Image (cartoon, rainbow, N blue to C red; front, side):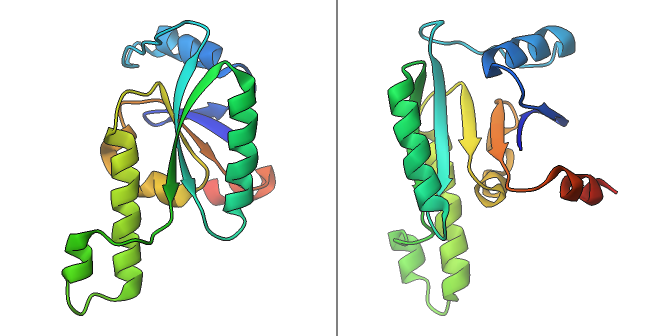
Length: 155
């Protein structure tokens, strides 16, 4: 199930995202202004984990977006590898911590590289690593969870 988020409000993603965003902006009054270079396009930064089965999902989604024509996608791979020079020089840093920090840097780079209308995260981890960077932007978080399990988590 996909959700569109605005601050603390979440709603099911069951219609055109541009319509949902416009409705939210009108009804809430606290959305930041979103600008699109062309009303027929949506600028999306896709922040995509690349391990386990996520790489296939990324490849399929990218192929579909590139064929769509209404979405301008910028793609950022979150691999948790390829440590920055600073992280590589830190002695005694456990590999798991080094990987998490590298993932955080990859996410931050993706979200600060330029303008986007919507950020799309294929898993929860990169969204969590984004910290406050998406607080003032619409974002989509793809989750692999059943409705029953999601409701159980809310309890």
